[in-house]
Length: 154
Image 1: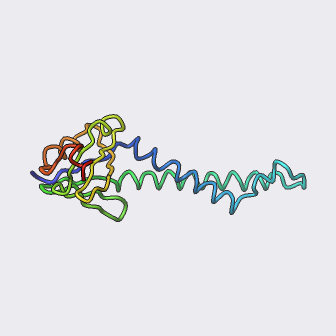
Image 2 (image 1 turned 135 degrees about the vertical axis):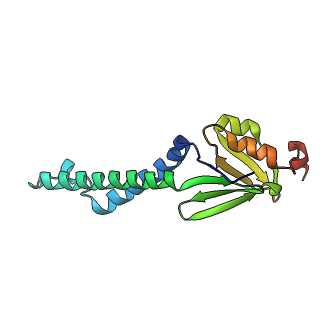
């Protein structure tokens, strides 16, 4: 099998990223804004306070869009004969097919996120691609799969 490149579902990646960016917005707004001074202060600087808040939110929005584009471009899977390599920003994680002992298909299909367990018993999650090819690739290439009952006994 040649190397194949798959992209995770955009909507799922964005759902994970938005709460993080909202927390960043609150932190930045708390540090650098007028903290809604325009709502309760009447010292003649109303326009300054509003302008400062609007500039801060616009700067955050621009940064959010730029980071979102980078996130979507730098987040992908490369499938080869023995493993799947997940690239995110500047790091990568390799998931060997031989280390996968169980794939939870019911959860995977319901949540559009591949849930599998490695030979150390750790649950791992990968966002599926649009066509669901990642699940089929794992099912086809993982030869050490066991039943759920066997895993629970251990």
